[in-house]
Amino acid sequence: MVATKLLAAMTGRASSAKARDGDEPVFAYIRSLPQPQRGIAESVDALAARTLPGLKRSVKWGMAWYGVGDGWCFSCGGFIGHVKLTFGRGTSLQPVPPVKPIGMGKDSRGVDLASVEELDERQIAAWMQQATAIPGFGGKKR
Image 1 (cartoon, rainbow, N blue to C red):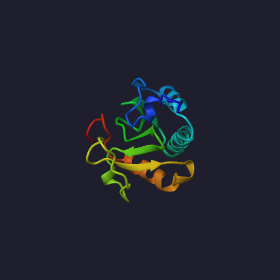
Image 2 (cartoon, rainbow, N blue to C red):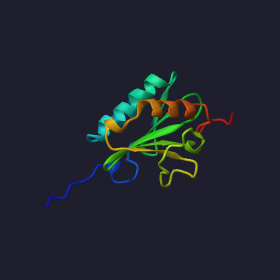
Image 3 (tube, helix red, strand yellow):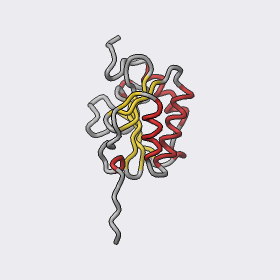
Image 4 (cartoon, helix red, strand yellow):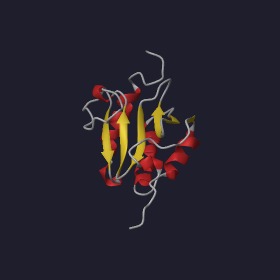
């Protein structure tokens, strides 16, 4: 058996991607993911761009983060077998996303996507819109 080294993003921990604001760091992070995670993350990113005017991107805590205005609302990170899409204030969304991510805070909820086909664009776009209406992480309280 040949030992393969997993990308840091695939080990169950956040990747070693450097924290930086802007589109290019997020695009570089997504390009670093293997398939099918790369395709899933590209689809999530494209959906966010179509859904949210004024979208801003950043790499924080080894994942892609998205927001509008002065805070970060949701993240997208690649792991072994899936991409985790997490909404920081997910318990405030309707319907509440089904997955309670470990180590992301008691109010965080999201979905684990193992393929592009599992991406329910209509529901996720609705969650994205709802999430940007709630004060985000790192922003000013509204």
